[in-house]
Amino acid sequence: MLIRLNKSGWLKIFIKTNIKFFEYNSFKDLIVSLGHKKIFMRTIIPNEISTGQFHSYLLGAIAPRPIAFASTIDAEGNPNLSPFSFFNVFGSNPPTLIFSPARRVRGNTTKHTLDNVLATKEVVINVVNYDMVQQMSLSSTEYPKGVNEFVKAGFTMLKSEEIKPFRVAESPVQFECIVKDIIFTGDEGGAGNLIICEVVKMHISEDILDENGEIDQQKIDLVARAGGNYYSRSKDGFFEIPKPLSLLGIGIDQIPSEIKNSQILTGNDLGMLGNVSELPSKETVDNFGKEHPKFIGLETTKKHIFAKEYLKNNDIESAWKVLLLN
Image 1: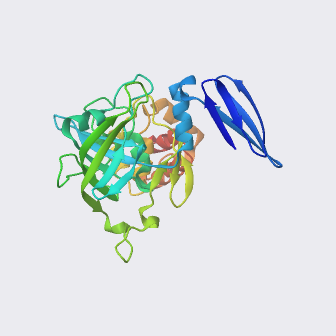
Image 2: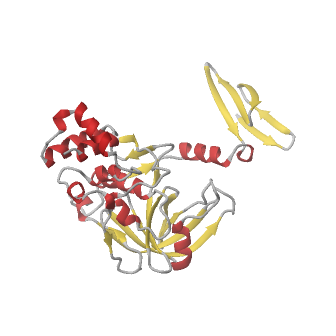
Image 3: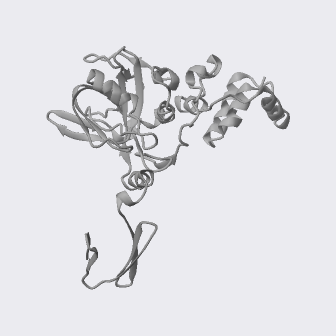
């Protein structure tokens, strides 16, 4: 079966099929009968719906996508860190990676990462595994220019050997890259900016290597981006992370040291705790204590254990209340 659209409208060519179609709200729906099976297809012409809506369809359909956790510096040397899922590898000789910090659909502005690579022509692309995914998500918050996302998301800045941008020490693989070219696909909101990078040095944690010195896919435990709030864990399937706040998260740097240095709470846990715009009020915490007296007077380790259980259920507010109880 072949269905084409030309200037005069819909042209249907079919063999041993029965096709019906109708149109509403800029969509064209087709019902295709193949024997006893009916297939319902929605055909969309990009310029007949909003960019945001088509963007959502693209992200839901082309998934899972690997994540380029891009570290850059601006012309004054200020670090920046941000994740991008328009990313992949495109050659090994020379080793070529391409990622795209697209123009924002809302507001048609460019991202700090694009501004920085235009100024410096250097970037570190760090891979993202499950142990750091919540911190990575926190770093995607739209902090103002000059704010260091390494600090906000609780990552360790590791000096690169060939270029100026820092590596993410927690990432199991880091690529130091020079920018060879940038292709601008348009100047409207949602347009891509393809940053073509050549890898000049690669760093691999020995913890993810097998007995033959190859990367073990179980050990590296990569995550990828899908549509909506969904991510995909290579060895475990889909899971959800709520989108970072439209308001700025306080960041891991604002979490009290007793919590930040916990032996119980992981980087992912801290990433969730840092993704709140403000802490619960004393009154709210006191009321929580009256409703749950078992949490009052707990020693630190036990408090952290209970808070971790709330975080497993994505109940960040209750986790904070437990942690703040005296």
